[in-house]
Every structure is written in C-alpha cells, then in structure tokens.
Length: 66
Image (tube, rainbow, N blue to C red):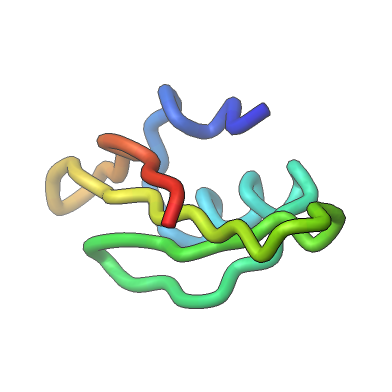
C-alpha cells in the first residue's frame, strides 16, 4: 500500500485521489502535508504525508504515523 509515495504529481488533487483510491480518508490537505487515516483500522491511526517538489510538481517526501 501507499503506492503514491514514489510518484510525481502535477496537482494536489491527483495525489488526494490516489490516497483515496487506496482506501484512506483525507483529514487535512495543503501544499506542505496531507493528513489521512485508514477507516478500516481498529486503531485510530493517522498518517502525515510531507510534500516536496517544485512549483509544477509534487512528490511525497516521507510519511509518518502519528
């Protein structure tokens, strides 16, 4: 899972769509990070995907469990 980690995106909406396609719920999203959770998990585990890139590209730099 989390196949979106090593992909490049032109729009944040495309990255959000890939996160949702993997079954996660997005809690917060901006140009610096996206917070999401697995609704099927028994635990209240949330993740933060920290974003990097340029003006025209976005990449997930790292993902941390919070």
